[in-house]
Image (spheres, rainbow, N blue to C red):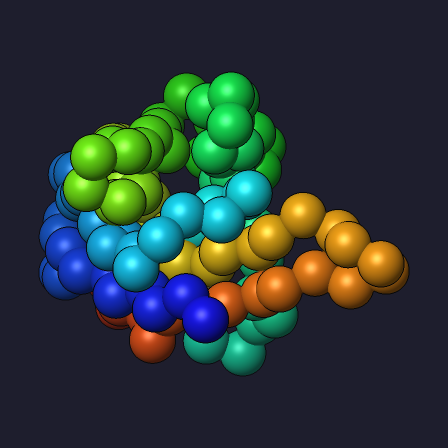
Length: 118
């Protein structure tokens, strides 16, 4: 089992910044941030591969968001800059293990609300 606790959400004006944190009981192979806006499906925002630190982003946040990790603290961060109203949603931390024998472990945090006002 992996426990994930997000923090750092809040209300911010458009153009502002927020930093989200995800404290994990342990890292898994892949750590990600997802978000879900009202009435929309959950979408993958950013991913970091723990062994090599490589990262990927959804196109809408490239150049504005940065995912990073602190191995000593088992914490993943999402630095968000130049926030837009469309970034509003509940942000979830996700941990996935490697695929083994056709299955993989998949864990979610409780989510943290990010609201961007105009």
